[in-house]
Length: 128
Image (cartoon, rainbow, N blue to C red; front, top):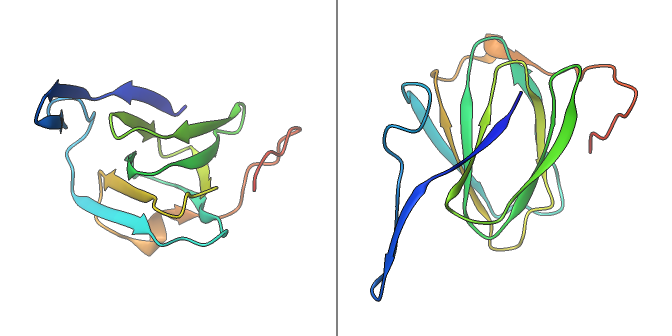
């Protein structure tokens, strides 16, 4: 199941410095970011192998998550929050603020065969 971790942040009169070091539970092979999103949802899939870590480095967004037995929606609204998504976590990102930038770190290089688009059949069906 997806889990939130807090990233170490150093703050002084000059500003903030957030460190992503020794906290991501996988080797990073791919980094991408999503921005300029209208009212659309992004994602809408899970993976066979890829683990991901999502950080909203500007603005805010919501990430719906379902692992087949548990559903939740996480609000990412601080650049020191990191949501780790396991391969079984079907997820959809939505409700992006106009200034949102969502950075995603991935354990694997892009492979179209790694994606599973069909959502789980659940009783709550909170998907966007």
